[in-house]
Each structure stands twice: as C-alpha cells, then as structure tokens.
Image 1 (cartoon, one colour):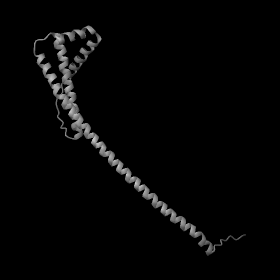
Image 2: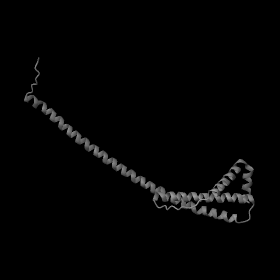
Image 3: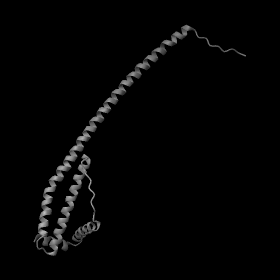
Image 4: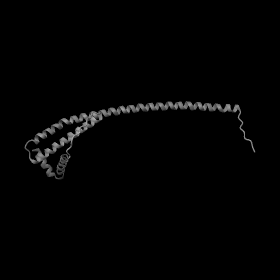
Length: 171
C-alpha cells in the first residue's frame, strides 16, 4: 500500500501563473493582429475582384461595339455586291457566266446571313434580341449548299474548268 499526494503551495502557483497570463495576453494580441491582417487582405482581394469585373464589363462592351460596327461597315459594300450580281444575272449570259455569278451571288448572301448572325449575337449579349419563328425549307437549302460546294470542288480538281469559268466571268 502506498499514498500518493500532490503538494502545491500558493507561492509556486503564483510563480507559474504569471508566465501563463503573459502567454495568454500574447496569444490574444497575436490573434487580433492576425485577424486585422486577414481582414485587410480580404478587403484588398474584394477591391481587386471589383476592378477585374469592371474591366471585364468594359471589354465586353468594347467587343460588342466592335462587332456591331464591323458588321454594319461590311453590310453596305456586301449589299452592293449582291445587288450588282443580281442585276447582271438578270441579263443575257452564257451558262458558265451564269453559274459563276450564281455562286458569287449565293456566296454574298451567305456572307450577309453570317453578318446578321454576328449582329444577333451582339443583340443576345445586350439582351435586345427578339426571336422570330419562321419555316425553313431544308431541301432547297441543302441543294444550294451542295451546288456551291460541288462547283468549288470541280474548280479545284480541274484547272481548265476553273480557268474557263474565270474567262467566261471576265468577258
């Protein structure tokens, strides 16, 4: 059998309490300092995000303005090309000349449709696009696409056909 005891004197407790109080005080000061630093970092981060967001909005507006300006600038001369090819198509032409002009005319119309789609994307981004449901004739659209691609493929595969078309278009 034995006896286990703990002997604490009040003086020893006083001596050990002072470093504990000092450690506790330093911990509070350090924690408060860290909190201030973290809050400052967070504030700077929020300001940087706000600046980045404003820059992104400005870039988006500039892109939309550029698309609209470019599309409208190309629209006018393209309409002139389409109109002139339409007028020439209404005159008497050889078969080769008509084929060349038909390709130029439909290519111009395709470019015009592409420009209109670019303008539609700009309208979508600005929130001002109004949708319109319209029927689509798929067969004529596919036939026109195949005819354009076939003529271009034939022109690339045989140089004489290409130069014949070019000669007949230039006369």
